[in-house]
Image (cartoon, rainbow, N blue to C red; front, side, top):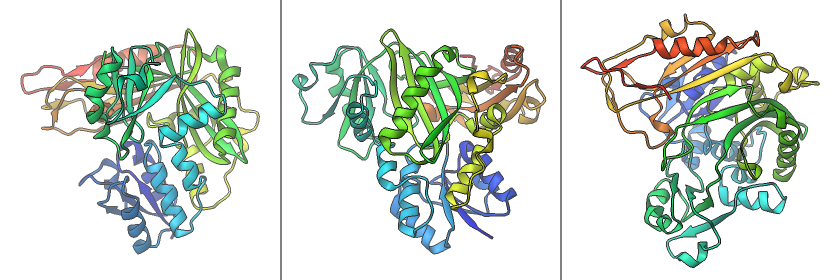
Length: 410
């Protein structure tokens, strides 16, 4: 029985844990939480942070794992590569490549060096001055170099405000610098793909719909396939292939966020993982490619069946998909629509909650406030999925002790 370590135990990793078990593997989950959602399905739960590479390496050596993987989350990509390297295990990317796709200082430098379109930026630290960032136009966005889930990300109307928010941003980082870039009014899209022998196949292009907040930006409320920007497919593909070459990626999953506005396409960031908006659920329906199986196999040094990738063009798919990422107003949860009821609704194929009855929902400052998810998929291409989304939004409720519905339809 092969032993595989999965970094992260949230709902984003749950399907991977369940699938690994179905293959007969012994599945170990590493997560700092006491009772992570995916931990319930695993054989073993290791109480270690996925940011703690040394802790994960020690645990992996003690257990004697055959492979390590993650999905749906940024920083554990680096931890997985470091664990694989320390234990001489297969990995689709090296620690150097993993560092480049998880640290925005390196990432942005590679964009610039390879003429990949990206937003103008500066790196700032406690000793920086207004003169250091005078070349940037307001408004600006302040980001940690190495965090995830929109933690520590702020949109600021004046560059001077960056120094007031810097400590908050750095509190979510292991670095002493932060990224300050110009705000680009735009639509946001995500590109998911698979790299085989340095060749990229794009598996989906989705619209990434965001919470409209003047300060806490980038918080995603839903994904939609096909994207309204499919007409830009050729340019999206060219930039994506340029990214693969620039970062020296030879195999495994790829996830890219792009911004499309008046100045054209800008690359926001890139990651070597399956996305965190349950792309593991929608990609097989869109493409016929079992991307979770592919990640397992590449993490164990096994051959990946890339037959479904031959001549695949996601812009010609008839599939429609919507991933609803639910948020709620502040309050204590008294009642919530049972998951089994959601799964009886039209086109709903997957759903999950991150909160339990009695939990307190706090204000929305980053993606960690997400209440749950609901995935809807239609193969007809008829547009009927819109009706199913409306039905879901009317059906779904989060009630407090006074019977108020806390669910925010965004």
